[in-house]
Length: 113
Image (cartoon, rainbow, N blue to C red; front, side, top):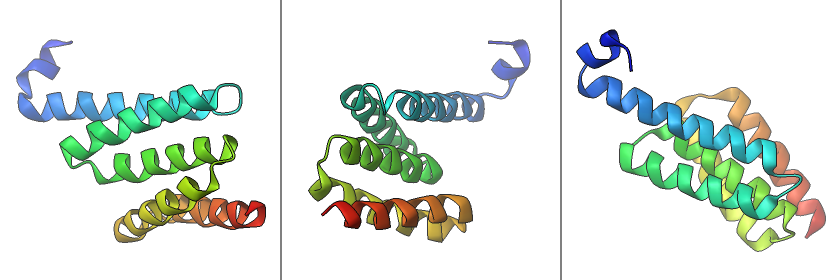
């Protein structure tokens, strides 16, 4: 931790924790094809931390990561509800890319039902 980070106080701690969430989500996305169970666990951890921080973007992205892992595990009954939760958050945040990716995965998931 640099001196500048320490001087920022509590906000730097939140930023570091949000960065941890972002890193967990990235790792989940990287592992989802080869190890969807591990990706699912990482997504759930990211969601838990995001919720504690009230980090809306982290919640939406981790819900998407959870849903993607569930889809790769062929657990479609858990996929759709997580995606619907994620899309609500992405819409509220006006995060078009997240909304688009989520809608796409919803369509793909319905195809496999």
